[in-house]
Length: 179
Image (cartoon, rainbow, N blue to C red; front, side, top):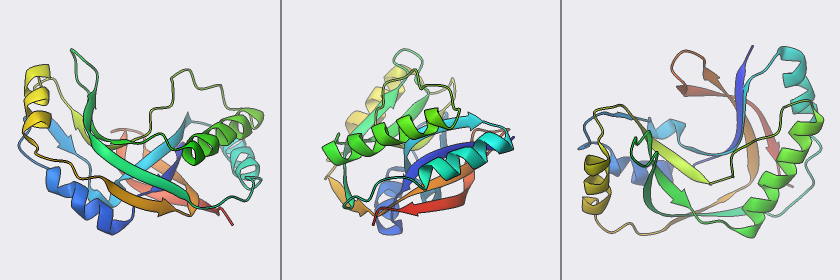
């Protein structure tokens, strides 16, 4: 069963700038810059037939203009038990529409509905127990000014992930251009 997700790939020049935030946080397992992405829909471990149906459904994405992506600051998921450090993505209407369309398409292909609210972000690090809420808050506060980073996405990519670690390296399995 492949572990799949759809995403917008982060261009290498943006990835290099995000990678400058790596280091200085105990308990962080840093994501490689080449694996940075904005997840649109985590599909999980699905069987090969459903994966084929998903790819067929995504081929039906309607034509659209490039999606503007703005990274606007650092944050963490998990509250009292932080589990990920991320760069937040502004909720652009085009991005939200793309994600909603994908949700409809993958559900029709047989994937269970997503139960979590879509919070666009780029994961920079996965956090172990050693990353206390205080340490994470201090890291974010001391990271300095986060100047917004902008790029345009021209395609959705379907990535596969290794099952054992829940992380990269990710493999691009298919790409669906917007035009």
